Length: 218
Image (cartoon, rainbow, N blue to C red; front, top):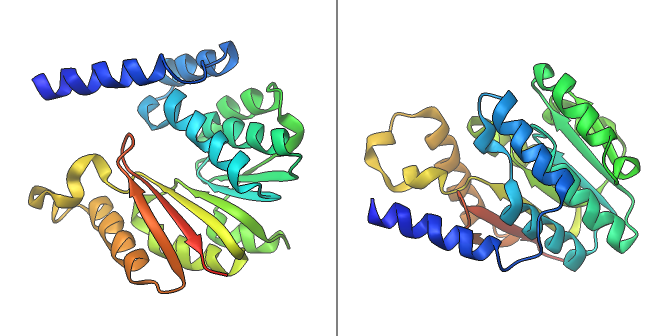
């Protein structure tokens, strides 16, 4: 319990010492937690600022997002694109029940023109766009991370960046009590796959639930 309180205190400290969350994202965060069942799935302030910063550093033209949820991460990624004069974020949400909540928030944002929001399975639909990507944010079904990685890899440009969320899965990746959990297995298999992939170099950040940064070699 003391460890949990320390983590909460550190998170609060960090969030008070980074670029402030603006009113629009704060209202989206609150609405997500009030009106959706799994509100904690939204990226939130710290990760949102990190995503925007990574976009501004990597300077991609086009970004692919797998798993829009309520749109918090999409807005942050798109704000990064806007700051560098990038082109478009293509974001896919497989759960059509999220559309009525998410679309108005995306269309009402200051980066609506940078976002192409689609309901559908990115594993099927992304390759139909005829677009290649310099960055991808993988945050969909954990059980299909490996197949999604295989699907999007040919769509990525050399030197491109793949960001994968939840790759520590609340610590379950090292907890044998979750050996028979399909989502934990999906994450473990994905981490093993990336670690063994000689086409890339990668690092796992212990931020929130684990964020893996994967760079495709030139």
